Amino acid sequence: MMTMEPHIRSAFDRDLEGVQALVMKMGGLVEHALLQAATALETRDDALAAEVRAGDRAIDELEDLIHTECARIIALNAPTATDLRTVLTVMRIVGSLERSGDYAKNLAKRSLVLGQMRPVNGSAGSISRMARSVVGLLKDALDAYIARDAKLAEDVRRRDAEVDQMYNSVFREFLTHMMEDPRNITACMHLHFIAKNIERVGDHATGIAEQVIYLVTGTLPDDDRPKSDVTSLTDTPNSTV
View 1 (cartoon, rainbow, N blue to C red):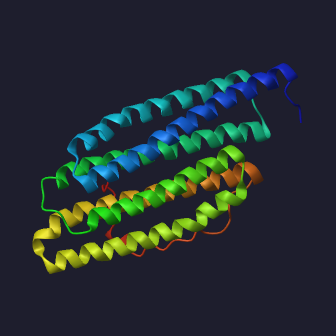
View 2 (spheres, rainbow, N blue to C red):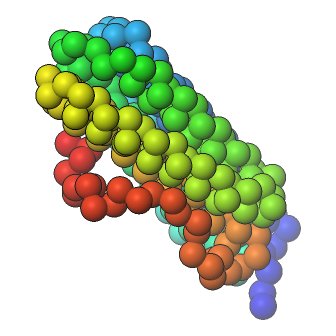
View 3 (cartoon, one colour):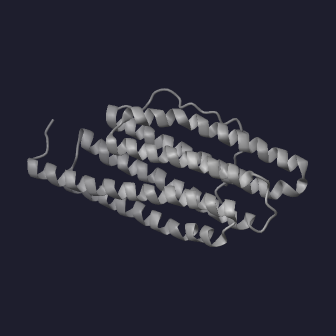
């Protein structure tokens, strides 16, 4: 197979490093948005929630910029084999990050609604703990990408089951609150959708980890990822609206 000329190789590597820096910047914005949205929910801080919603624009703009840069790299360098796989992996990763940013925005949107309702005891704290766990997964998945660390990526896949268990726990918690007091039903429905959105960010972090494994080994994991979400029948296609 033909390889790039040294000067083309050098330009490709520089371009790729620039794109990877943008990916990490985008990942940092998503992680920050998730944590800030969870904080806004817990502290009932409407201004912070509004800030998270407004900040989603920067995440979307980074996605557009990275896709443009990836298209330019492909057009100028015509990468093959591993190099092409690297560029395609970047494009898939930023898609997952953009979707995760949407979930953070939705969390902030629902926290504004919940701020007008009576608090449900302990629920916001449970959501915050879940958000911190998911942000940890996302950070490790991105670190695995930069380091090309398939072992760390596989660890992210395994830990996603822990997030599912946390989701199942808060789901049961919300059901208990609704049964104990019907006045909690509307708030708990919003909280359930928030928890489900956070659980889905965990799925996206796992998807990024799987892309890292593909990048390093050339094949996607052939086993089903461990899932412990037993509430799938409650999910709806429009839960991020």
